Length: 185
Image (tube, rainbow, N blue to C red; front, side, top):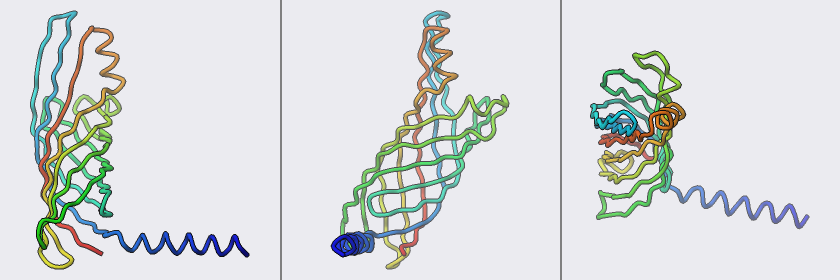
């Protein structure tokens, strides 16, 4: 009986904490640029390439966590299309009654689904993300969200192999600006 009471107390506390979290969902558009720097000592290559990117995404927000999924297209020599999954922590600061500002940090995964060269597995990456965002209340439940995110791409197997073979370094990063509309539950 004591175990049952303890379980009920824990369940009650957990459920009451859940309702204290503001939850919302929404979607929007993303634009930005992606830069890849290649440096190989063995063959004296030092090259940098910047490309534009655009896409759409949907997100779920639970006060301190934002999860999003989307599709991004990078315009480059090898046109790349990727599914993007992001898990970001955030800490909101209310500025007045209508505006909230929040820093963002977390990790993402870009799963390449199309590339002109035809080898999608070679173009998928984990990405470290950080940035800032803000919400502007349109109504009590509806809001507009703007974010700016910087992403640093972790090397995948293909890049590590090329760096080892050619004694070099490949660095990829991007900067994204997004605009979205969300609805609070």
